[in-house]
Image 1 (tube, rainbow, N blue to C red):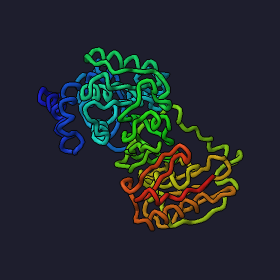
Image 2: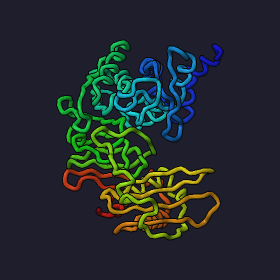
Image 3: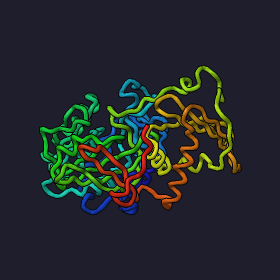
Image 4: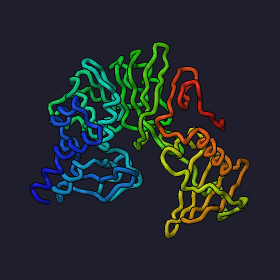
Length: 393
């Protein structure tokens, strides 16, 4: 990599790209410039992609400084921890558990947070510390509280805060509980995804406060919810964009293995065979998965990859009683299915996709979320009064 390449791959090049994408606004540019991303990225990272959730191979600053610099100043997420720290070497672990988020997402969420001078902010998920550092530069360290469940991750972020001359209140604890001692807050931002918005975040916020958080059902598909806290103890607002964040640790899903559903038999076991005109590929985009997960909240899926682009989509209910499969092969218009158990899960998925088409094929921007102390959370379409119908398990 030449000196010119390094310069283009540095902060100036990334800033220009983010401004072009509409993520980095002029009011956040001073923080971007003063609080560089490289100061909040460890020596060893696993770069992700602008779209998708897969990670590449390890890039180590000590052995490949130019490659590391290029990835840090690319608009991609960087995995910084695997398996809650159990996987410490250069190899990828089973699950990514901490990261430096994609810069476009970082500044898009900060834009939605719409902070004002004097605002007090609670951040859920310190991670590398870059997000809290940006907020501290903008608002002053005394107005920022950041909470991290992993003590080692929090300690490393604190070291970076100190090196950058910043002093936000860094707390080790369960982000789902918030941090009442530092409230009330004018803004709450989560850098981890949730399937249920913890009501503590609402309780610890002032009326009129804004909560920005990635929300998604267990089936998959996440969107950024931008909620406004009401004086009645509710929080309500639209989804403003799609997202892909690691789950809040105390909300991580654990699904039964496939073998538990087959009773020790090989597929198709005792399942009933059929044919469907619905392609598994037509229900695999992020907003499709979101819709399926909202309508069928006890549904989850797995995919078995085949050869030449073929695959088998599995659907399961969390009760462990029903399953279904559909086989995809490019060029086909009819797809083989198998269903087993008291519920016909493929039929249910077809019904949801028909509903989605009847509603005009909505994307994230037409959905919204309401959270109340008595009714919990409810997803709506276009208007808070138009609740999305949910199959009760």
